[in-house]
Image (cartoon, rainbow, N blue to C red; front, side, top):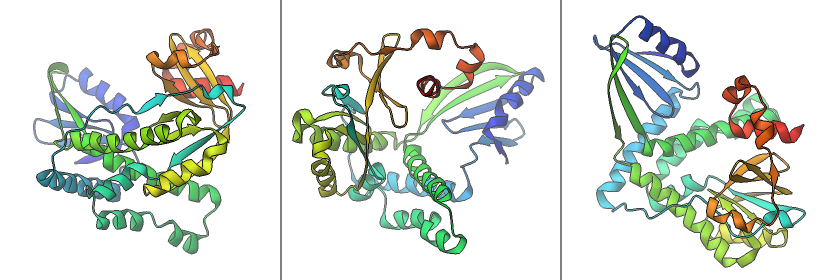
Length: 308
């Protein structure tokens, strides 16, 4: 099996079709695998897919399957995000992010084991590297992001869906799909955190404005109460203060944190809660060259417009 960076896939795939090759293409969110008739395999993946991360993924999948042997997995609806009150009415709000929320929930429920958690810590032992290499603040932040990526990718692998494409003489001949048997378990984990965010919104009434996955927007005066609420459920958190802006792109509304210019979606049936009309960026985005719109995702484009 040969491995390459995912960035190289498009040119390789184009060449295969031009050369009228016969092959199978297996696609997931993070990888593309080309399988030839003679059994040769060429895999294109993100650079973060190192051997240690792949071992972590395999371990989480194995433990997920073991969990399903003794537990029924039937997740209800997962909202992922909800708007309750208009956060743009305040000069600023407190944004509270849970730390390692989905990983800790999985650990609490016994979906992953303590040994797997310890494996993750050993793979990303930041304190050890600080002592050995005297890491800078930027290097530590990069290392923490890599650890977060490893956690999320390992859990996300429970929901892996593969699209299998069969090409004959460079032409698509057949397509089918399959998914991990643990896919429902992944959404059960998401439902667990979703429920905690809804409980926080209920607990603090109109002073919680919005949540998005494992992040919540609240009135500054209840920061300590919300942090304590999450702590009682076993979750640490990180707080930051920021003004919120409402922007519109076509018929879609978004909340944007002014400190980082991050976008958070608002459901269509909840847009009426936002009292101001919002800053409409539709024209600015339409006027951008196609090359920029294709190269960058909408969040990056909006962030650049707001910065300017």
